[in-house]
Length: 166
Image 1: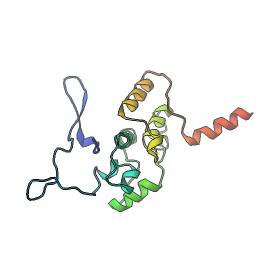
Image 2: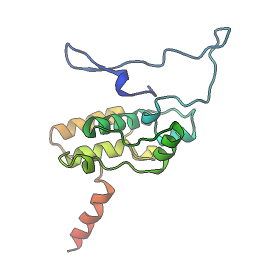
Image 3: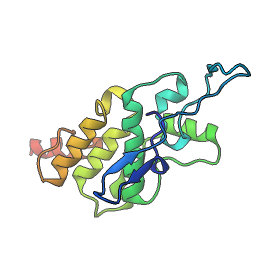
Image 4: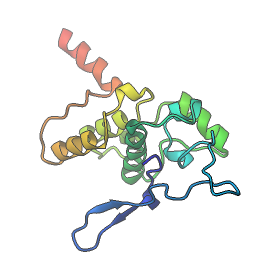
């Protein structure tokens, strides 16, 4: 999709199913109706992963996984993982900073849900879920109380490891 964001998702009234809208049907055309190629960033800045800022023409499914992570973060904390005054500053912050763990903003948030969100927001695409289907399966497992495939966040691994030495 390459531009997942809350305004591109609608919930169908009849069955409460989310629908993704706006599949980039509008193209930039020249005077002769030919599509123009552009190196401009595709997507809304707050929902674009760090690697796309470095390579604007890059397209992959993990771009949507990252955007899903931003939307989950926003839905459960009330704010986005990264904010800035300008687009350029947002690009820099997104590339360089780690998001504040959601449980620091909402301590009552389940640890497993935080794990899912943070995995979606990993800097390296290889560390994210493979695709949106994998995110959906992980959320379904969490909602049913089943084990997740997502490893514990870094800040929780060290205390667990040291605890095993005692």
